[in-house]
Length: 416
Image 1 (cartoon, rainbow, N blue to C red):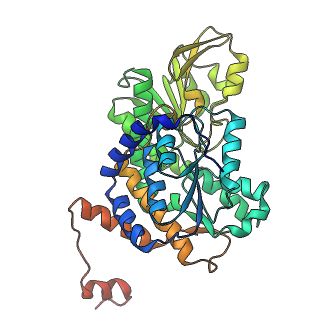
Image 2: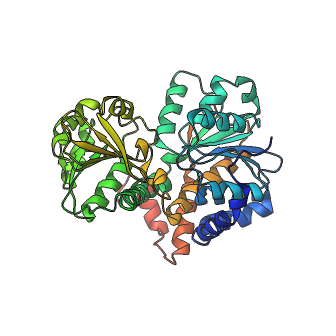
């Protein structure tokens, strides 16, 4: 199958972007060197659907260095960068993606990747896994297993597992400590505000920022908002997370109340209809809405569009909607992932750890072919700790090591 991209002639700027992140991703550089020698994916086809920007592209090159034949698409129509896609095609990888694809085009690109008859699936949100199970079950026998990048994808996988529908093992990359503790918290915290700030060019200090969801991603977004000088309000459905938010110094309100006072709203829940039309009608004139959850379902965008009296494009990635009370509400990046649809995503050093987990988990699947159950599998602790130790090494940092006496003490139950 021939690649489907916008313009191969854009490859040069894509090459520059990938080389920049490569310089700042030392873990992946080491894995690339290792894979080029061991070739763990020799003769195998890997289907990958992750936000198609420079860091993802470098992961693809690392897997290709390990012998994989790569079939690549994006996981969000607005996060694909056409120059990145062009550079990957120029390097001999198969790409089916372009920026601002329609839903029909996006589905077609996903389908092309699945029709490659993949042996390994690397997913971000579960689109590839769901498609092969729903529409192409005859291709499942080719699949050794897969890896899932996000919280949303793992929720979908666990639902399939619960109903005995999952037909091959899937490694829950998102649940690795070297992923969620750093990627979800520090990566999301920085990249979401990068997307908001570069898009709006407005000050955050002094504003009331409403963060919906206080998981690891929400914690990161709230922490950075506080650092910018915002008055942060958390909305939650989990009483334990609500207590965490209060003890972290934030106010907690239900969305109906938060809607009346917020200046900026950021959804980070993984659920749908978090900000509904009924909430929007209470919002201030000039309220800004955006989403940092994987799918564009957290804000009821369709109902906002249907009920708006007037609509106008304010600037790139900002559309204004005038509602019944004549107030204007501003939606960023169509309600899609603001850090990728309106920015470049997480910092390279953060994704270095996440994608190191991805690459090593894919290798783990190959090494354990046929011996893993068709379940959601935890990233092996040795992979998690290997990535952490390598990261410390690149930072030129050392930590303590237990003495034999300490090991004995911790492993025993008698106090001598």
